[in-house]
Length: 250
Ligand SMILES: NC(=O)c1ccc[n+]([C@@H]2O[C@H](COP(=O)([O-])OP(=O)(O)OC[C@H]3O[C@@H](n4cnc5c(N)ncnc54)[C@H](OP(=O)(O)O)[C@@H]3O)[C@@H](O)[C@H]2O)c1
Image (cartoon, rainbow, N blue to C red):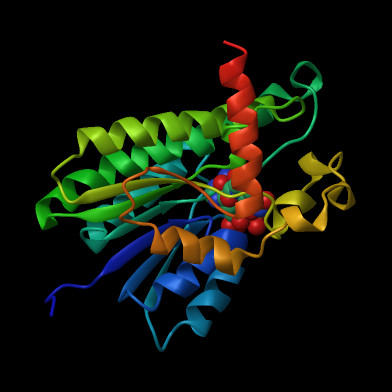
């Protein structure tokens, strides 16, 4: 038995996939550091999970330097992380040239900047304890770039590329890196103002997944040799077809 707390940090823990990561990680962790802007849903989650794990809440806007500093400080204070789940994210639908550049840059800060800073803060401690797991929540959009979500897809493509290289750099450290690529998953992500142009009804039922199976696939796949994990048979078939036509076009 370990004489230290098994600890996870989950960003974007106030809703959707992040809240589900907290629920499933509570079965294997003593402490979960939950990070997001809205405290209230995280307080409810802490109450729900209190018999399984201690949930520490960090209210932070991870598009800002201050918010990221608050989260990295929590890593220093709570000790080594066994799990770092870089999940916080949002999408915005619309043509790049007509969209607000501030929103696109905030997305870059959140998906890329916060992920890099938190990995950089967590890895030295993971090395000290001889291992750990990093999940960078990407998207099938990383492999299927499409108009209307150009910056979203590009930030997720960054995460895939970065995760593969990082895993190679960490060979032999005991640290695993996963770039999780979910497809359409029922969460709050499609309900924000920036997604007003997105019509959920246009997506056939067979493409939608619930958060439970997506997070289960991620945790079950933590030690997979392949860093990039596309979740769901329908998504996998779609991605393989698209990648094949991209290769054929070269
Ligand atoms: N759902 C899908 O169809 C889908 C598909 C592929 C990939 N993904 C990815 O999955 C991840 C989770 O998304 P979700 O679907 O679970 O969406 P969600 O239900 O909208 O949850 C997003 C989470 O990110 C947090 N967040 C957003 N902006 C933040 C900020 N500035 N600072 C800190 N936290 C912030 C939100 O918390 P606060 O609002 O409280 O800050 C919330 O907890 C994202 O990276 C997304 O790109 C989702």
